[in-house]
Length: 338
Image (cartoon, rainbow, N blue to C red; front, side, top):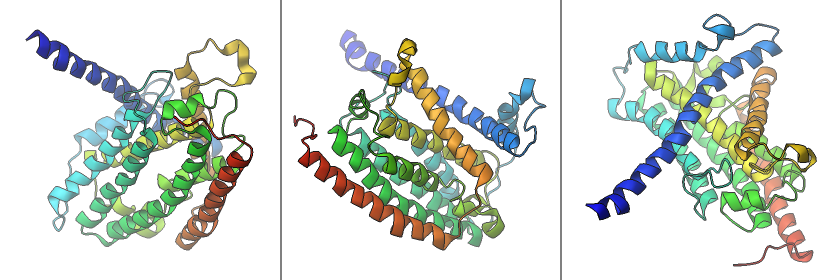
């Protein structure tokens, strides 16, 4: 019995506690990201935004969640009910699973694996299945077209994101996300790889179906896209999955280009601030870019979206991989091999 406790039960409890320590703050951050988005967009439009439910409208996310929770889940007559109900679960689950390898501070990570970046890339690639399932199972032309658009869009921009990540991996010499952060202790990669930093920010907008690349759910054309037929908690799970993916992509951007939990060198007097606070501040800054883009930019046409991905981002990211590899080889910046 003692061996069962020490070898199996106690490690399992520790892992569950670590998972909850990541998931609960993440769900709270997702809820208040919706509040922050509405407040930021309202300020840019010279409006007030949520200001009725609770002081300064701070309880608005709770009211929205309660409303969606008590509504009826409607399954269309011609839909495939199993796939229809599984799609939002798949989308939401994959948005949470990716956080297993995200280090928010030194040693603060659920699974510090050596191929963390490959794991994250694989999980983000799987996210497309939930959207395709929703588009097909709804038995709606609008949802089906939204699913097809999303599939093409995510595949297109994942290629360029992959090459952007390769440039960082070449510089850091590791696929471990914690090692990538530590490699930036002297210089954040957003400085030598600034063009790729900009490309990553824009590609992340397309990868998460955010303005100006929200073609899969274009209201003026597709009524709502792949989630047109969804209501109540099934719609809420798509909604939460999208915002969790936004935070995940922002965290990946911070880890790859902005030094993760490391403080800026220019703020030496503030190095006493915990790494998780620096990480949260940087993620918030990247998320503000998402909200700023939604408030100010018009939607792309679909042909413009695909042209940008295949004819601009792909050649630029591939060319930068070659330039980085040549520079590292010629100037002796290659990290030591294990």
